[in-house]
Length: 400
Ligand code: PMP
Ligand code: GLN
Image (cartoon, rainbow, N blue to C red; front, side, top):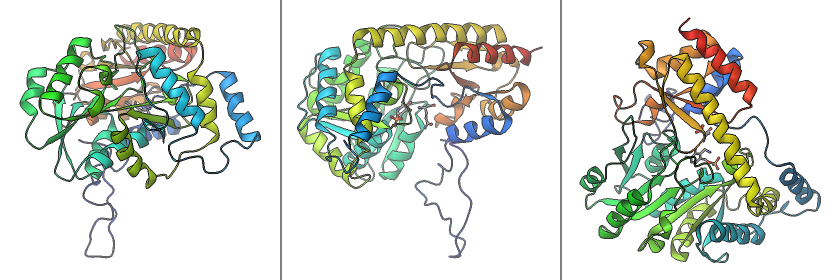
């Protein structure tokens, strides 16, 4: 992985680098780098995925109420406040027919990011192999490295970005401990089909593998539907499912996430979580408990809005000359810059703000195989229509 740039500072001690070997390749996340560049150049930031409009007003008011009423202002319970655990259970039942015990099978975390870290730190021994789809969401590679494990990529290749299950089978070795899934997938927008999920589940059962599945974009599916792998035969006892409130409710700054799974798995993840953050921030948990219970019209309205934005940006990017890979889910569009005669996505993204006042993210940094995503650039569409329209106008000047 060619993530960011490694920190070069050295200590007095024989020029030894300060950042340890496990993290040396993970100096600065690409999101921080490109957002800083957007800020410095006054560009429209279609790089880092955060909405420019806050989520539902009543949910914000619920957070204010919790703060004022002193709910969650002191350490909340380790597994999360009971109201949120009950709401996560009800949400999983309502959308997927899955039943989890709020007492033993749900853990509230500080965003999905902590859930990923705690799961990998809890479940992996040094030397274990983890198979994950590349391009990877950046924290996967870093957390696998922090756990001392080894990542083994299954490359999703353009144009379809589908996982090849024969290739997956060929990657499994006696050291393979865990499959790390992400559906809907950031950055490609791939949504795993029921057939793909069944094939993956069958391999997990056959080889007795654990599965950690990151489903933070569960409510952002435009083509097909979201199916949790935990619901498939043989998977309940081996799957840790992760989601969070950031994307679904457009409050990415609140960092409320959760884990669901069999009691033994959740207990293991809780052990690691205790020593990462002990407990997660309190008042927002009460507000997200209310958010999860919003009526269906909220979820369908949010999806319809994002669908329209996806089409707006995809059309604009095509008109500007990009090759567009239409996403089935998430709020990202992966493009190819080959039509511009460019092939280095990282260099393209570093220059883009100066060239036309728009920031994006190079997918190339999410691959171990530098060739596989060399010319891919990701844009987000979770922005106001007028911002997206201005961005495509600016991008239209690239060829002009
Ligand atoms: N997983 C994926 C695939 C993501 O895109 C993100 C970014 N939101 C996260 C996890 C992190 O989620 P959170 O902000 O809830 O920590
Ligand atoms: N998930 C968002 C993205 O992929 C934000 C990630 C981040 O800033 N760490 O853009």
